[in-house]
Length: 511
Image (cartoon, rainbow, N blue to C red):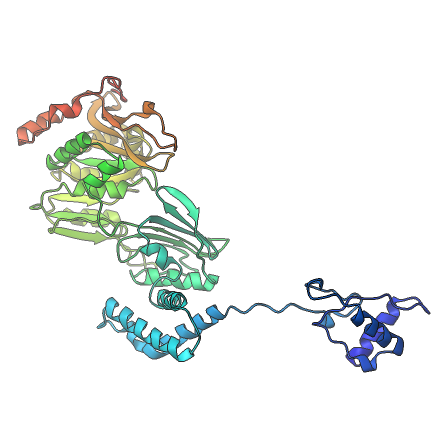
């Protein structure tokens, strides 16, 4: 049966016998063959065409009742010409450069320069009228997709962005000045996001697939990367990038940011040079690694430094540095090298200083033993919310080593090994401040005694923008290790420990 006959039959069934069909709006997008319709239907169409509204009055979408689905007017999907051109340019670029992408003899700069030259020729050959801004955008987008990290590349190049959080392919958040905002950019598909994740992890010898659906990696500049893919990530692949400054932050930068004060910086400089064992404590994203970098800048240039990390992040400025990085197991579950094994091995490398990026397991026992056996001046970080919590956290981590040690023995080890705990926190205004500089004084009974040298002054309140006006202030209590400074010829101004009149002798106190 022809289409027109099916339409006529459908209309006849829908009306009672002997009654004409009601008038019906028509659409210019729907053309019905007039010659095959009954005479009275043809007459009705002619009358309807005469009464057709003007263009301004015409409805944008007309639904014809009582018609089969195949004859209803269907809106056409818009075609993104720019996206199609970008896809053609990317395909042509792969064809032109071919194996040069994997040629180790070509530097990254040379490859990018060649790719941009080829892209310009490809776009010219397309003969598509583009403005200067559109041409620049097209070249940049294709170069990012082929050579960089797609939509993330511009965020990585933006110095104001400190963290990138991809929740799914169409939802990307960024952190600027401590505040989260939704970025306008997005991935074209889940496959596009997966390609970028695989490109990141493959460059550092890691892998991610269904059998190993989460991975820690890093970018070339040391930025930390964490990726999780389905089935663990239910809503789609997730990617988190914590950027590090291309130029390492200095102690002057931290003073300008309000993270610490000049008096505190003078004390920390003296503590590092006096070979005190220092633990930087803080929560996730508080800036522990940044502070550890600044503390490492105080290390003497004539000492041998060994750094141990899960993923290389520290930016040690000295020349005599050996950098060690742990390794995950391979596809067969073999070949894993842990932080604990690297720490044990480092003791045979004649280090003057050992810097552990973070202790999060049984390696804390080996670190404490190293601090107690002649490797003074070691630095590390630990996740905790206060100096007292840092001591409890170290106790727990030591127990994770699998050694059946009594709790008092562990606490004695901590009290003997650790000299100073520096607590850094991220306040609710987004700023990162050192809230405690705490001396570990020893044991009293079964308790590790702590004494604050500096604490953050919350009593100053906040300004009109919600930013804290306070700063770290001295408690007025002189740490015991100052006597050690005098033996080593290290001078610290007495004004460093002078408490402001309103602050008094605040602090955790003993016990």
